[in-house]
Image 1: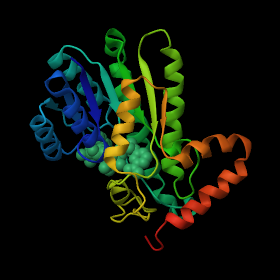
Image 2 (image 1 turned 60 degrees about the vertical axis):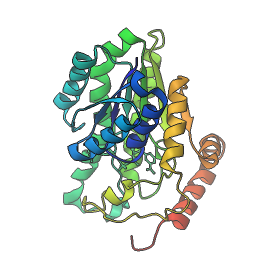
Image 3 (image 1 turned 90 degrees about the vertical axis):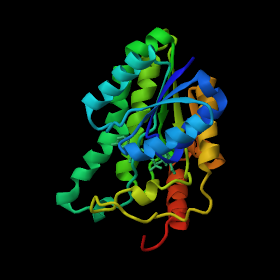
Image 4 (image 1 turned 90 degrees about the horizontal axis):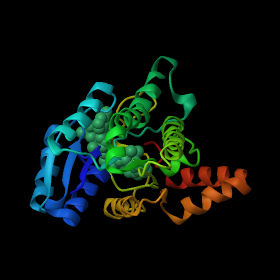
Length: 271
Ligand SMILES: NC(=O)c1ccc[n+]([C@@H]2O[C@H](COP(=O)([O-])OP(=O)(O)OC[C@H]3O[C@@H](n4cnc5c(N)ncnc54)[C@H](OP(=O)(O)O)[C@@H]3O)[C@@H](O)[C@H]2O)c1
């Protein structure tokens, strides 16, 4: 019976992965739901239980190493083992570097603490248990972690950091039976951009993108879980993401041009 931790499970892609796992495994799975907002975690847990799953809610701020360690230790104490860790918690930001006031640059570190350090803390604490269970690690990066996206210097840097960390870890774990799946979603229809930070490091309150062509959370969650269950190295989403990745090796300036063109067509002026 798999015991599965999902960080960032209170909404968006994380909540949808929990619902899909509940539907798929029912009572066979214990879903450990982690994020900061306990009441939203309760709602997601209620949905998962209605779909037949067992759940454990562990409110956690992944920027705090001791809370990440507690998340893992409590899971193992309550469930007996840990089979899957899905590092999904993340925040977004949208600003040109030159727009960021010098006294506000600290939010670059804050964002890194959630997207990168949160994954490091949870994964480090979980490693001995995942080795025992020959388990699975999932890291939800982004296409912005494969190609630098203008207006996303902080976010791209945090996702490139995740990519480097988990690629290196995969090699370290080669003979351990633990798989590492890096997921690279494109634009997915969640509130991440509305919750995200602006140049001042404040919550933007609006999305800076046209959202009409975003992938659904259902499709994104389905693709990540498919890759996880098959222990795939990577899940690269969207045709543009797949092509852009290889094109970057051959014609990097064309990819820069594509990224800028995409930003010009997708960004909402004034947002
Ligand atoms: N949506 C997209 O277009 C897109 C594209 C590529 C990659 N991604 C990645 O996919 C992942 C999920 O994003 P999403 O779109 O589902 O975003 P979302 O709807 O905004 O959900 C983000 C989740 O992360 C949690 N979170 C934020 N800060 C946290 C912290 N300090 N500690 C613990 N949990 C925290 C939030 O819960 P609380 O607020 O309750 O803590 C929430 O559950 C992120 O890593 C994101 O970078 C998203």
